[in-house]
Image (tube, rainbow over all chains, first blue to last red; front, side):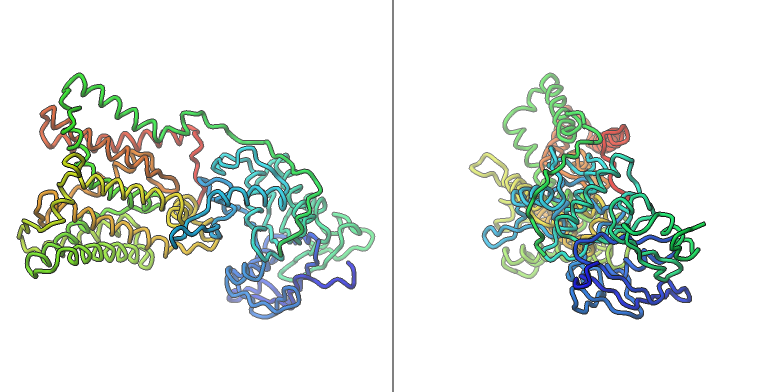
Length: 258
Length: 341
């Protein structure tokens, strides 16, 4: 990482307990512009808790979060969205009976006033959705007016990403297990989408349990273990074995892992 | 950030579409009831040609009018995975209060009508609050509230029949525009037209679809579900009050026991018109078709000298067969697999 580059997102000393269970203990996270940071770890390692703190679903007991160097207090999902943190959840959150444009703009529909009354501008929505899908996500649909339930897994993923990156002041995109429920072909498409979104300027935090996918798209990987940050490695300078070792706790191997 | 929109690579086409729907299944929601109307018309052409006389067709429109108004809001409520069984009682309560203000307290007619609309909206908001804040399921909440509103109407009216109302109430209920088209049907069609716009061009309809189709998706995009549901039920209450005024004008009388079958008849028309009973998808045009179909069936039974009770049986059978038919289509892989909760 370029030493001169400032992190776009900085989480410092995050701790979170649920009753007696200490889910996160003094966890740091830094995300730099133009990178994909993968978060990996075993079940219960704290990766989803960390992400829920970031997306405002949970509030940290201790620690601070800075977005572009400014302290952010994320007390709700809405706060987090307003701070520029978008999320694509594992279930994608699409309304299957609506077409792609309506899904891309769901909850943020462009409005046209007619006699002072607000009406949804369906035409603008469609043009803008096509543009966002093309420019930010890098896909074109032949049949954008169809309900998204008729779309494939990869297409649905693209629509969900388009909605996430559509935020006016987007700074970070969080993706939770985007490839978990996909077949090989759709997985390939989705990994391409993720790469494209990064190339077009949005840094991504990618939660995944699949090291193959992580090594295919990520720049760095942060390993979580037992609610703590077990370490961060650069993909280019490490192997899956190293990361696996960190996940299961056999220590950070420098040259050999049993 | 607006993001770098400099676009070097060619957008990839993801062509792996899942299923192409057969053409007829995309339009089945409209084609189905249309075909039923056609079949009914053919039967009547043979059995009783008087069915097609202009005056009879106008009677059908007159009968359909109240359900056009009720169906407008019910389409949105059902799309949002809700249901309102209290609309008959809301209509009657609004009308009784309006009638008492006019007959017993000499209020100006228009003011009393406005009060009726406010009563309707208030009942709707109350339904919405019970459903969202007390977390009572829509079906049970409105079933219980139906008793409450009906009870209040019965207490207020104390068995009386209020009759002979001043204009414009009789004209609205049973008048004819240019001595031809029932005024009530004009009101009904205007309601449906406004409903069409609300459904397709405002957040009211859009968020009803979102909530009905995937509540979780609606939450994740920051839609305030409780507020939307309250709006939906408030609109339902408003439409019920309008129906109450039309009902009063139609007989130029109102009593607290009127409007008993409103809810089931309206739900039947909406569902026959292709609005999915379990939410997420609906059609205002389909509701118009459904309302007309039910009114035609009722009228046909009268013309063919069936007893009134047969109308009830026919309505019930149509509801069951329509819902059964759509359920069959969905389970047979027509792709109406709505997302989970």
